Amino acid sequence: MSHPANGNETTVSSRTMELIVAAAFMGVAALVMYDSWRIGARWGSDGPEAGYFPFYVGLIMFVASAATFGINLFAVSASSNFVGRSELKQVLQVLIPTIVFVVAIGYLGLYVAGAIFIAYFMVVLGKYPVWKVVPIAILVPGVLFMMFEVWFLVPLPKGPLEAAFGY
Image (cartoon, rainbow, N blue to C red; front, side, top):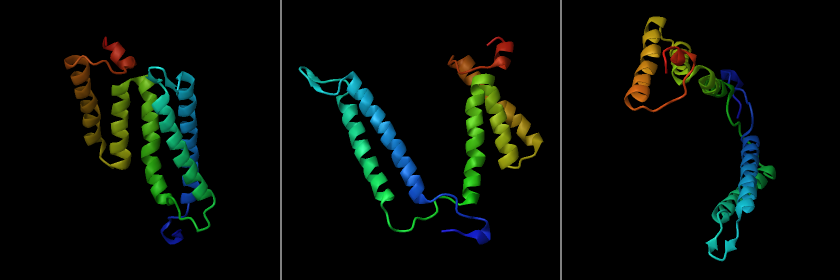
């Protein structure tokens, strides 16, 4: 249902999202069944082959997704709004920086990307002043670096800054 008075206009219907998700799950299920069949999804002389159980899990997933797809495709009732613009904006304010953070890990390393990620969220979403943001954005990745790289000896993705310090 739309609420244009509060700036919460409709974006996409729940029916459309159900169709998209069901189609995506059908695609994943088909891939699981194909690959399970490729490695052997039959009952062999010594028992089930490696793809036997994954094939049937994929089949169940495909049938359930196809049923969901069909029910929503032929539904006659009106569909409600999946998400309002204001809620979608809030989700995107978190989703887009998170995607950028994951991509940045490959170029900057986990710790520098984490510092930028923490600073972004504190400044943009939390509205914290810079004098509070800078120490936390530096100290949290610094403590994590000490804990994982020095004490536990767990190598995590590093970038040029860590390489400059010899790690």
